[in-house]
Length: 363
Image 1 (tube, rainbow, N blue to C red):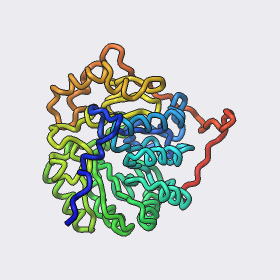
Image 2 (image 1 turned 45 degrees about the horizontal axis):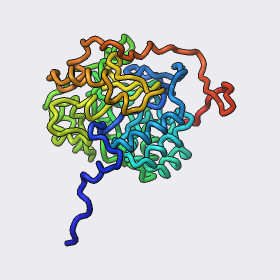
Image 3 (image 1 turned 120 degrees about the horizontal axis):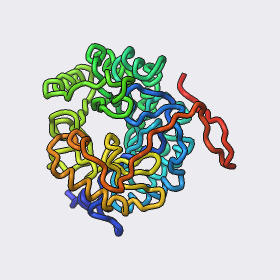
C-alpha cells in the first residue's frame, strides 16, 4: 500500500495561518429575505432596511483574509442568501479562496438558473429549511411555501448538488413529522439536520415565541433518529441543542471535540450583514467590533473579544448563549441598532440609482 499523502492536519498549513483563527465563520451577506418567518433569528423580511450592509467588494476582501488566517468553513444564511443581487460572485469568492461553503436557503429561489450556477460553484452543502409538515411550515413561513421548498430540494438532488434538509424543530411539530419525513424521502435527499428554535429574533416576540419548545432530551433524540431510519434518512442532530456528543449526534460541525459547550466565539463566530463580529447570532449585545474599516484579525483578537472569552470560560451551559445572555456589554462594545423596516424593496443599481429588485422564484 503506498504511503498516505499529507495528513489531514495539512489543511491548517498556510504561510499566514493564525493559530487562534476560528474553524468556522457564519457570515450572513444580507438581512433581506423573500419571507418573514415567525421564528427568524435575525428578524429578516422583504422590507428590512439594508442601508449599511457590507458591499460585495468588502465581503470578498474579508473572505480572502479569513481564508489566509486559516478559517476552514463559511456558512451563510440570512436573510435569504439567494436574494442578494451578487450571490453568485460572493459564493464563488468563498470556494475560490479554498474554504468550504455551506448555504442555508428557504428553497423558493432554487430556480433552474440558480441550480445551474450552484452546480458550477459547487458548495460543500446546500441546506433547505423546513419547520415541520405542510400546516406548521406554512404557519411559520406563509402560504404556498412548503411544496415549493420541496421542489427546490428535489431540483438540487436531481442535479447531484450536495443537499440536506434542515429542520428547525418547533413546538407542536411532532404530529406532522412523519408527513415531512415521507415528503423528504420522495425528493431523494439522504440527510436531515435538526436544530431547535432559539428564543431570539422574532422567536423572542409575540410573533414567534409560541414556537419555542424546551431543550430536547435523549429520548427525543432517539425518536428522531428512529423516524429517520423509518424513512431512509440519516438524521444529524445539532450537538448544541441535544444532550449528545458530536459523534453520537452525527453533527458534522467543525469544533473541538473536547469542548463542553458550543464553542461560540472560540471555534466559531457570526458576522452580521453590516460587518459586526459576534460570538453567536443570539448574542448581539456582546459584539467584538466592526469590520467596515477594521481587519477581521484586529477585531477577532481585540479587547472585546478577549473579554468575551474570559467571561465565557466560566459558563457551564451547553449553549454558551444560555449562560451569557445576562451579561452586560463591555465598555465600548458594538451593539447593533434596532432594525428599521422600510415599506418598499429597493437596491442600488450599478450607476448608483435606486431601482426595484426583482427575483425569479419557484411557482
